[in-house]
Length: 430
Ligand SMILES: [Ca+2]
Ligand SMILES: [Ca+2]
Figure 1: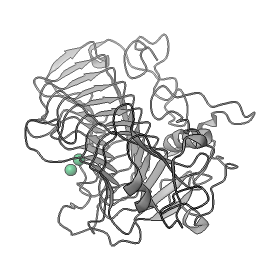
Figure 2: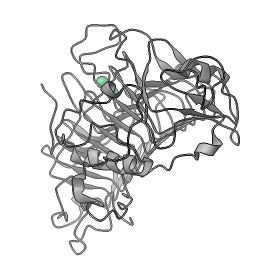
Figure 3: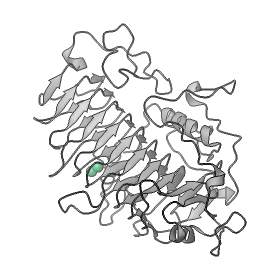
């Protein structure tokens, strides 16, 4: 089965355009394509050149289109992420960097910057593509007040690209340490996961992972209990994961599409996904598998399911001890299986979400709580007959009408004000 092209990817591109508009750079793959296949044409060819701010031109959705007025901040999905001021930089790396000075005049390479960065450092990566042909290990420890920050140099875009490594190779980018902050970076074409996070208390903001050969962002360490000392309390905020896929490979750990999610929280506790966008990954959008007390909010998942992928938008649990995943103000549409699925997680809560045109809207277990959700146009029905269901759209009279069913519209899946459903679903109160 090919990629599901559900209304194209213009909503995603629109959100990304907002992101890039604010950061003042464009990676060149959003402009004018409009289709399902995002090819990154042009980025590689630019080598180490600085990416230029002149063409955040996609304009999908028309937000901020003509007069240069700022695009409205979307209440759900990625929001603009403001760059850290250049004057804060303490370490500078560049694609062609060398030596150990790590200054603007003499930038070092990525690995030297990673080695040198300690609590309180601000490491800027100059724009361009970094060939990730060796392990990258963020293994230090920052603190809550003095994190270790890595970010694209203001106005530029640093791309960590694994395409020179054979698919299935074990070269990875990992955060094994704690209190790292990674902002405004792009990670693509890695031979397995885009970014692995076995560490704790890290923050990703405005990071984009795509076309990696397993999951885009995976928080994962061991399944040993009690959870908390690894793979815990990490936050992904305003991040995008798309077109991560593992179909067609016969390699241990790959599953012909079935193991590449947008964001996986495989174990650990109290991890959070906020205001993210995931689409066209081969397995699920967001999968909290065997984690506990996870939070997923204000996030969009669409068009999942390629080859043998499970094809859920949000999968809120899995094997024991998975429990208490909380999903609120999220939108799932165009996924080939369930929009939002408890997947045998214990004590899962789905509150104020909207599903649209998935196979089924919601899949609940006996102890799942589902309240104030909207399901519409899901071909196999709104919900199964299980769980604790309170004031959801299917429990009300009438039919949900939306202001728009066009993903490029800012009113996509927002209920009509007087239709009797505006007080529930993902947009309630927003
Ligand atoms: Ca799977
Ligand atoms: Ca999965």
